[in-house]
Amino acid sequence: MSAPERPPSLDPVAAARWAGHSLGEASPWLHEEVAARMQDRLDFIKLQPTRWVHWEPLRGGLLAQRALQKRYPQAEAWMSSEQTAQAVAARSAVQGPWWQVARWLGPRIQVGLPPEGQAQMLWANMALHTAVQPQNLLKIWHRALAVDGFLMFSCLGPDTLRELRDVYAQQGWPEPAHEFTDMHDWGDMLVEAGFAEPVMDMERITLTYETPERLLADLRAWGRNLHIQRYVGLRGRRWREQLNRGLMALARPEEGGRLRLTFEIVYGHALKPRPRATVSAQTEIGLDQMRQMLRGNAGISDKV
Image 1 (tube, rainbow, N blue to C red):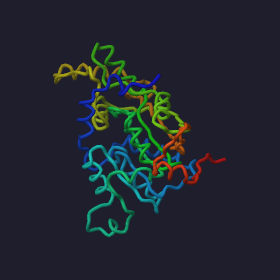
Image 2 (image 1 turned 120 degrees about the horizontal axis):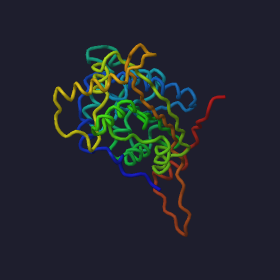
Image 3 (image 1 turned 90 degrees about the vertical axis):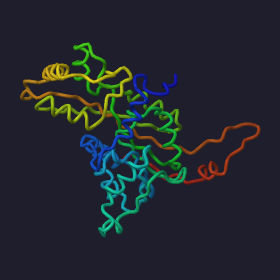
Image 4 (image 1 turned 30 degrees about the vertical axis):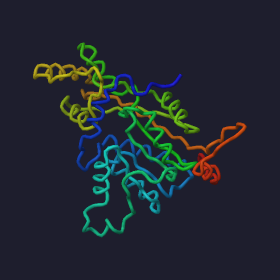
């Protein structure tokens, strides 16, 4: 059974609006933390990319970009975004002002996607859970990769914000966020998009806050409510006071009365396999496909 074209409760108009929202020159700190944990998984991959793509680098993590450049100092890096202006802004933030020597002596960074089938790694941190058409996005990533190239990604899983969802449910309010996709469904979609050997895992990150105001400030920095049945108008001061009281119910005495909030982080890794020609009485193979079929195996394996 194939997955739906988009998460059933995701509002595509709201998602497009959020994708174009300016973040300035700093990436969300939670995204940077997730990116650092995802980088640990690169220790188990033998392939050293000579060309790699950072998808949505401004949201995914500028510190992560610098760390990956340090890990692959000789590799050509590409920054790609559905909003080109955001990729340009990310490149400027990483390279620094034009008058600094480091800008010209540092690694070359290009905006956009490299020629089809020429990237050895595509890095996409905390992006898929807001994709309007995730299957199409996975196919774009698949086309960008070379044979034996690999995809590394992370996104939010269905257990995210479970405490906040309980608060909203108790008040009889619409959901505070759209539904997030389970890691097993992501594995199925990877295979449908043409990837091979998908490896999925997840972890839960628990954050605690002193006040509802601090909690809500972080949530505003990290995203928006993209649920298609969210509130359609502004709410007043009384609603905000009711929300704060509901959030105080999240306080845990064993944690000093701090408010607790859970985030499920899904990690995925998959390869682009060598294409297989369909066996028939007459088979036609394009030149680009033939080139990919003839390329050698770069090799990816776990460390012992």
